Image (cartoon, rainbow, N blue to C red; front, side, top):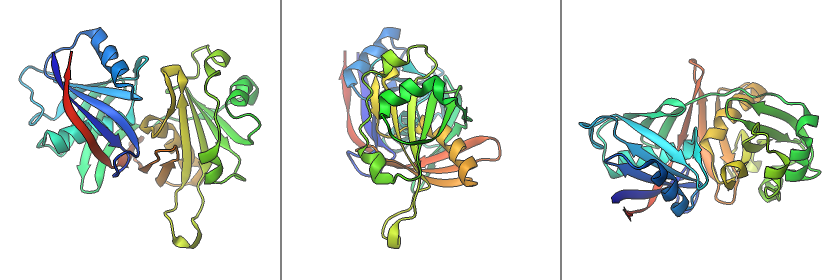
Length: 290
């Protein structure tokens, strides 16, 4: 078996920044267990598998494909950066002739639109509801110790816990915060929480020397085998909803400040969904042999 495979850095225009995803093009049906074996071999936060929906489809002309995402540990219901990476492979390497692609996924139909300065993903927007601190205090204490917390919300759709740090902290604090993910599986094993979002209100950059961001974040998901995800589109389906309410804004600019960093341009839509735009760069292409 030989499969075309690519590695794409998503939510960045620079190689070795953003979030890398592997993308496999499936000409034929793949054995079910092979998806997980390939994802485990790639050892990236996600590996995406693009498949044809009909025998007559082809990757250059067709506009609708199936899409699945796997971490090294399991399949996941939504992955933004690997969707962005998949669209980049079809648009820029395969030279798909369409300006908009539709992906049929576990999270419904997702669209990717090609623009001059990036690719726009049409994603669901998930609300986050206030969460009682005492129910999750052990998880938070384990992860970030005595760090001051301003707000806590929970997204039942994504099973993400959103923890907003105190406004007294700045971007540098979040970037350098040591987060303990090793013991989170023992502290939270009910299945309620599958991802931890740490977020912080943005700040105006002094003197206009650097770009201002509306909010910052980092994302951790050891429950899916990913200690820290560098840039997470799916987390921003929750963050976009939360910060839009907090800031009273529909258009926002976000920075996920992991060590690789990535930027996301966000626009909430009238239909209750969210457009998230990001850059991409293909850093590897080859053939997977198994």
